[in-house]
Length: 257
Ligand SMILES: [Zn+2]
Image (cartoon, rainbow, N blue to C red; front, top):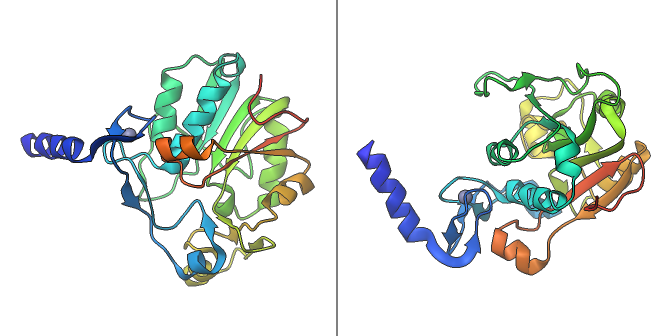
């Protein structure tokens, strides 16, 4: 234990500075740590949301997309949206769960597709996005980051997301995005891990979203907005080039009441 404590403080001192700030743990940092790995797809398609980049908080281990969600939630929290919302958090990130534990909501449910080899909090539900165990119109806010690329029957999942969403819903979506790929490409249930890694960037990804992602969402009946902070804020909070897509059943601004 003392060794861990010493390592922790060496890290705190080594990374201390005023160039960046982590909104997950509050640390002031002079730089972020490296995170992720590049594959040939990253060079071929200019990928957002994956690949090797400086985005890891050395203190709490949050990464760029988590801190972007936190920035967005802070903006939403300037209104009554969070306090009044029935929230479904799919594949919950630790830093975002912690944020919700400090803020009032009408209801907060978190769930994940339980997979061997991973650990889950005791109050996390096993959820299959293709068959959600909730009534129609159960949620006003849904968080679903880096999930859709894993779902085999995406049509069923999109139908389920729509069914459990209230008319005023706001769904926060993030996916690995291939900017230079014009159209999303998909595989099948029988694809091998090697095929998926080669074509979709990871052994458990069944599709690679391309630049048509917003149109793909619109084709599924959603109004879509894109949100990202200013470049100055992005640098400060270390959100890289990440963006949040919001999908709603009626037209709303990405961040408003
Ligand atoms: Zn941190």
